[in-house]
Image (cartoon, rainbow, N blue to C red):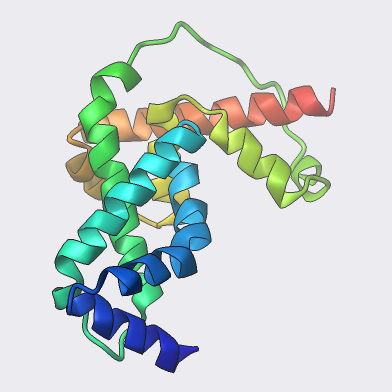
Length: 177
């Protein structure tokens, strides 16, 4: 597979349309799996994927052969999702009246849930909470990095993470109530 992938990438560097189609087909599912957690729905994830592939084809000359294409591509997809988020952030940072108190939380509940159930709960978070949660929990960014990427304050990043965690706890408890 690596030899085939390298040949396709080399052809993409020469701007051969059929190679671009092959690369798209080869990595479409992977791209959706990366983009969906950062998107509000499948249509938005598809937009991120398509924009990400456009960036790949425009910048494929910067890709260094011998390095992991998936890692390089993942970074492009996440940055594209962040760009999409920033473009739409005025719609996302709406203040919500909420104060869901959690009296106690049983961590064993999570052990009984499937990965799909957990991902669905994360997907249901409001966009601003989901973006911060994913960047912090999945990608390992620190609040100052998230704030810089999303053009928000560090306090907003911390607040959104806390609210995301709280919403997830409430959602998990309501599933098992």
